[in-house]
Length: 609
Image (cartoon, rainbow, N blue to C red; front, side, top):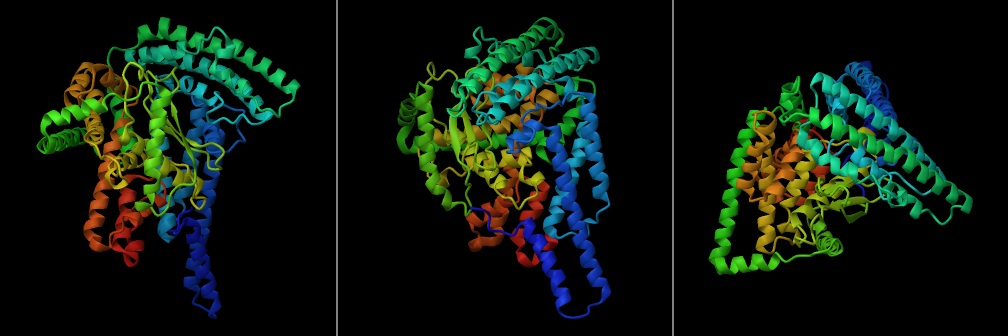
């Protein structure tokens, strides 16, 4: 079901209707007609700029194009690392920012002012990002091309393997991957010369993942899996040709590229990596971290403010955990509580059993969504374990569906060590990654063709992760958290996100050593050293990203509390959630302004935005 609320396209229709109305009642004063015509011309120009920017963005980022169902560039991997690519990015953003500045924002309808503001911010952030040297740090244990490329070529990822052309396209992408790896090594060598290198711990986490790609038998490679699942409709000649071509590409391109990168990192790069972990330790690193804080939180909060907020949230949530434990103990005694937790701890000991248990959560939650949402997504999603080659460093995560429904969303569960440490499915994790978290929010955004494509496929970390953390708190309203362990799990999940505010800023801004961050996390969350290390190393590799969750959740919760207070008995949770999500992801201040207008009511709504 598509959203029922007014959309950007309807804003266009409203402008056209006003023009028609002006002509239906005979001659009108020239000034109002000219004003309306001018506004319509600016609206049209805004959409032309949005469309032209998006089209050029797809050409520059072909894998992103594939991910959203645009398959014109499926034979390309993209550059992303060269100075030529960065210059094209710079020209693209500066050209469109200059054209956008020639439009008069106040003459646009309210719905289109939102598009204008989002576009202007994105272009400005793009230009600011180009001041920093991310291309000199192209490889890490999370979200980097060598780690993600096997998923692209596995036959179960975003690259389609339905036609002969699809298979041939990926052969060309393998050629592009070989080129990308050469450029990455060259960039890392430049980084060694300029002092822009990764922390040792990041590369130590990365090496085992690269080793996993060095298969002695190409038929065991993840890149050969599409051949093992080749469609039955292919001719025998095509099947034989593709099997040979893939085996040769893996043997002559993919494995040598991984072997070369692995040897370079182990023998040359790792000895040159730094023992420190702070982004601020790099040349220009303090400004770089400040930019990433702004980028990921979409606020003007300073690192020190976020650090203090984190400390307060840690104490607040720990008090809530203690209160819950006391309540449980008073009702059934601490011994009974301990026995219940012990009974729950047995869990599942195979990946298959754990995934089936998560499917059980899906069956329980899905029928309840109508209680909280008037609009639910059409796109399906699957629940899978994270592949073994990357499960030691990759957290549970969500991958978005294609808009046309040909590829489902994927909730990836990290099942590492499940045989040695049996576990129960995590209700907070399911709510965060699947529904009503990432899958619901992102699918609703992508299934709305009325949004300009830049907004339909855009992402703001604080909105998306803030929503997902907020969604964890909806468990009671969806029939979950009926046992103490899961309720405590939800509070502990929120506590982890509050701790992140402290340790991310501590690591990258306040000069904390890795051991100090580990100690703080273990003391405040009860995490094991191995579990805390996995988290801390993630924050080291991705500065600022971990701040988005709690900052976004706090803002969404504040907006809901304000709406409940202002609307009283008229507050409708379904309408509130639909309004919050209907325009897609956006910076938190723009979200707040939009929702303040909704709370104020129709008469005041246009004035509020």
